[in-house]
Every structure is written in structure tokens, then in C-alpha cells.
Length: 251
Length: 66
Picture (cartoon, each protein chain N blue to C red):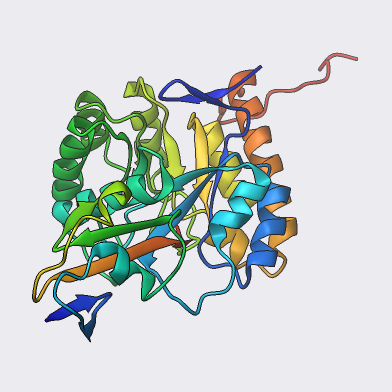
């Protein structure tokens, strides 16, 4: 069984879904089911007394593990508080650490992220930090005890795919913890490429929830992640400059 | 005294607890977390934690996201 193991916990699916961007909880529910995901992110926000239904009910019904994020935080202090509130509300010490630098790019702030990661690890959290495609930062975060690293393929929600496959490969080569490609996935081939590059899992939300047919795209992503994983394990042929005949060249 | 609950100012009686502040928004006790002045107040302490004048109460829950 080819399981994904994060902090000792086993997952048979290597596709981690986010729940952001779905037009309704019904659409989200169908997409989650089609994706086969076993781990799904949620955000923490002020309670709205008028809100009908909860994403938590959907996840509970589907028996999907919840991974709270710290989306919307700009400083380590905000992220640490958000993680502690999530732990209190959801009863999990897992956190997708996300500290962004500005609203326009939503790119992760490496300094604040590292600071928060150190504090959260010391506080007993299982920390999965969202970072740029920076091999040096990935290594430092692993050294301070993060349970995985989550480099971006491209900015959140951009659908631009993997802009720097070489850096993702460098991160994968050096990492002893799972590498989860997070953000930037636009379509199934992007997810397959992430796995072919050696990532252990893919996290995506917008590519599914804002697709014209979310359930169908979720199914495509599931297949792409599985295919990319198999291709990685199978070992691709080397790239050649010229042709190499596959049929005998003599009559 | 005045306390702020999720950004809105409320006039409340002296001795109002965190639990009473939460109940102005919801009757739920699971899936909800509270911070007062940026410090988490654990659920087991809601009934016994009294608010002070100008306290900032944040009541959070999980929503769809990333």
C-alpha cells in the first residue's frame, strides 16, 4: 500500500483538498467525495450567527480529517493565535501555517512563517508551512521540526501551474519530510507534474471549486495525482536530443 | 461596561462571563473558539472567566478556506 504518512498518520489519498471558493456546501460536498481526499483545509473566521450549515458538518459526514489554516494572517503572532484558536475549536493540533506578505500576490512571508513555525512546533503543533519554492527555507523549516513543507507552484488561485519545476525538484531531493505542492494548480496536468517531480501530495482548492464542473474536475485531479505518482515510481525514460527507434531498423 | 464582541461594541452588565458573550452569537459550544484580548480562553473556562471593561472578545469558527 503506497500511503502518504504525515507525522505518523497514514493517508491513502495523496490529494489534499481545500474548501475555499465553492459556490455552495452541496457542490463542495460532491467535489470532496469525487476527489477521494482524506484531509481538507478550513479557515478560521469570526462566527456569523446568520450562517446556514457548516463546512465542519460536511467534513464530519464524509469522515475527512480537518486541517485548519492560518489564512489571512500577516504576522507570526497572528498566525500563532489563529492556530491556537483552531486547536481549541476543532480539537486538532495540526495546522497549515500560512503567513502572507501582501494582499495582491498572497505570497508567503518567509521570515514571519519561520518565526511562527518555531513557536508552533515548540507549542506541540504538527506544522505544515506554506512557503515559496525555496529549497533553503524548506530545509530550515524541516530542521526546526515541521511535519511537512508545502511549496507553492504559483500564487494562490492563479492557476498558473508549477512556475519553477527545478526548485520543486531541489526541495524534494533534500527533504526527509513530505513535500506537498500547494497553490497554483490550474488543471489536472499540473497536479500530475507535481507528483512526477517527486512531491508526496498535492493540495488544491480553487482549481476544483471554481471549475465549471467542480465534481468532474475533482475526479480528474484524483486520477492525475494517482497517475503522476505511478509515473514517478515507474521512472521516466531519459530525455534525448534525437530519435531512438523502437522498432528494429534492419529489415 | 463596554466590551467588543467580534468587532461590535456591546453594553453588558459587570461580571458578564465569556460564556454569556458567546451566547449572544451562538448556542453552539463545539467548533467554536474564543480569544479575549488576543489570548485563548479554553472552553472549560468560559463560565468562570469574567470580562472587564473594554475587553475585546473574538468568537471564531471554521469556514470554507484554502
